[in-house]
Length: 105
Image 1 (spheres, rainbow, N blue to C red):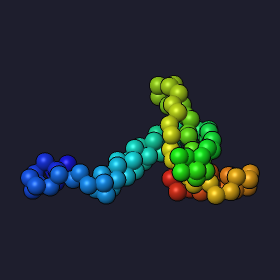
Image 2: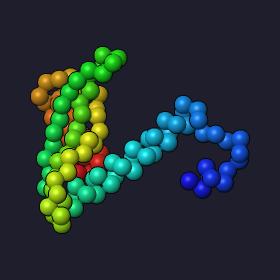
Image 3: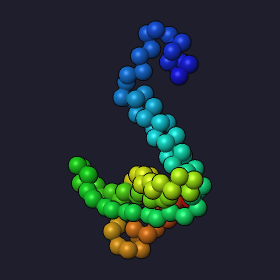
């Protein structure tokens, strides 16, 4: 934020590469916050669904559902998607486990 507010006036940060980098950083921060909340809850469920994107690549979406123990509020958050090269049960399970391990859940 400091760099954007006080950086050179000719720096617009509007190139596609810079925008993608900034979105990646923001996504990582949001994912980390979701994981912190899930770890606090201690118990969570996993929802997973696969579908093809516009470029015909099969993707597996991983969603976490948990209850905030302090407010008794149910939450459901998209965590990530994984490219699913194979769609058999063992492969899908491995993709989900890999995503959870990556996020230390």
